[in-house]
Length: 234
Image 1 (cartoon, rainbow, N blue to C red):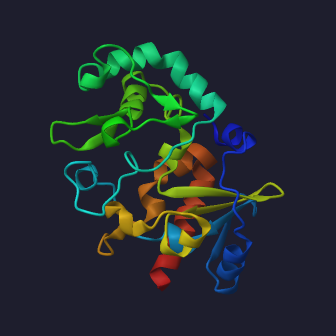
Image 2 (tube, rainbow, N blue to C red):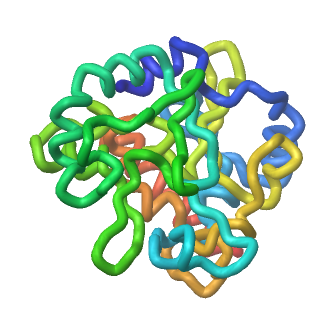
């Protein structure tokens, strides 16, 4: 699903972020891309991030640790529900060999528009030989050489990024961070991928493929350049 279609269905975060944006601007921490239509939360985008599923898999993870594939509610848009439903027979065939939940056909995969989490993980999250999680929808797209987002929901592609609708065709690109908790964002302390300050790679650099797919090469390059410059200053 394209970003524009997702935004047109009103799926972006819509809490009042005006105070947060003002504070970023006053501190010189607000970047701009796409001719000002996309504002950048540079502290959040420059935070350290590295995905390591072995650290957050249910049954293996440390106490008080959470996983984006097991603990976050993912609300599907109507278009995303329809795309998964249309591909479900092929998705089921792809997952049967690696996930016993799919051996007798498709299990219940959505309830009231939310991805279900039987056994404390998303129904499409696959356990590998090392018992770490990976996304079955992501793998299905790669197997079929499908564009990213053909069946993988946008919230799953974005994590830990967040797109906030500011109104007037303007959006804020931010991420799960301590500064955003008051706006209903989960604490980064829950996620091993976000709480290790020694990690060298930023959210913006780790999500480069997503940035390109959603906003194009030029905007993605600008986002990463501004984030790196900000990170070098702090």
